Image (cartoon, rainbow, N blue to C red):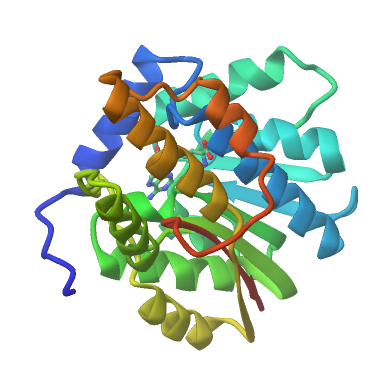
Length: 266
Ligand SMILES: C[S@@+](CC[C@H](N)C(=O)[O-])C[C@H]1O[C@@H](n2cnc3c(N)ncnc32)[C@H](O)[C@@H]1O
């Protein structure tokens, strides 16, 4: 299936996130709080496996309300930098970190495309994004961001990107169709990657490209089985339902999730 052309501007997406942060200080970056927990646990595990330590310098680009940064500060106590282009998100992140004075991070407004201009080339051991690049208005901006991330990493450094992909979404929707459920549409402010193209483009800027599936079982349980039960019972799905809380414990199986972790080594 061909990706459709988008008439979405960077400013409109920025406005969306600015307003979300202003209107919902607890779940500003997603309503799916348990998926977010799974994402953070996945990042911590892989960062640890890759040797992240108190001596590491790490940038979380598109850090949102700073929940990931706070987790990484607790886990690694490393030199942490968080940037987000929505000032109200950075405000939330500052409030979160200020409430835990033992946790330190450099938090400021910034654009993932401008990391080299701001920090210089080869500045970080690790760069993470969690559903940040998927918000960029065009494919060319997304791949420019990927190249900028590579340039801002030290040789031997790693980019860990949790982003969304069209193919996983299509497989999820095929499962939903089996249960008579409508497809989940990609939201207007999201621009999912096509996986094969992402891998090819990543190989231009990185020496190693690894895909890690971590949320397929969670998506299958919550977006197929639980959604079907909700449809039968005539109730709206609730992100805080116990099914969501329990489903993060499932061992991963299948490939039914749009959300993947890619670990790219420079
Ligand atoms: C879905 S939220 C995720 C936030 C956070 N990473 C998390 O895991 O909760 C996406 C975030 O990316 C930010 N963002 C989108 N495009 C950006 C860009 N070009 N530069 C910096 N931040 C950006 C948005 O403002 C928003 O806070």
